[in-house]
Length: 67
Image (cartoon, rainbow, N blue to C red; front, side, top):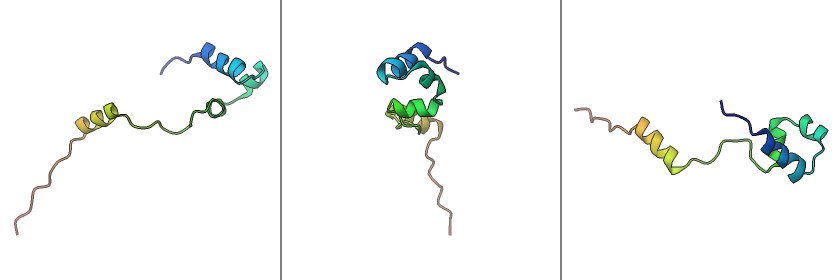
């Protein structure tokens, strides 16, 4: 699990969004992400991730059955 950048999140909420400390701490992580303009869903796939998946799960040709 990655560490949470609390100072950065607090700066974004208190300075960037103009929230009071009580408003900041009352938010859920999903609400804060939405207010900061970040979608709650998955991020777009990068070329590097696509290549990683292609290497892990290579395409295989099906052998033609006789007859």
